[in-house]
Length: 201
Image (cartoon, rainbow, N blue to C red; front, side, top):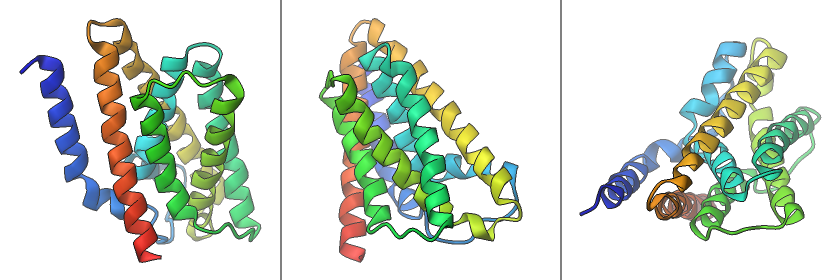
């Protein structure tokens, strides 16, 4: 078995093994504290982490200008979604939408979809809004909502950067194949989360 195949196999097993943890993400529990807790939240919420990395990775595969505009657009719309949640704007099936974002972004990477600019920006903006809304429902329980929001936006940007860095593997031998397999694994986790949340709700 090649090194790439082993990496894909072990990566897929790790993602599958993390499904119980991912299922607990955005449980609706009140947030505590401020900036540090907000920064750590995306790193411990598996669905958010996978979506953030996938945005950067897909942007890297698409190249300029989307490699930079997608990671800027997503956190921007996260803020809009969080403000909407704080204002009491109800959005149906937010948790299912968050899971769908993991499925769709993973699928786009797996397909190596060379989306036109608008076709990439629109879903990423929508997914950013949904992730922000999910976070926004937790903000009233934070000691400092503004600091908490700043923390999770910064962490999200860093996760986008990590995805862009992973995307550099496309220049290696069999790198694109490896990245597409990683996208398929991310999409599979998203599909499982989506089915779980639809059946629960």
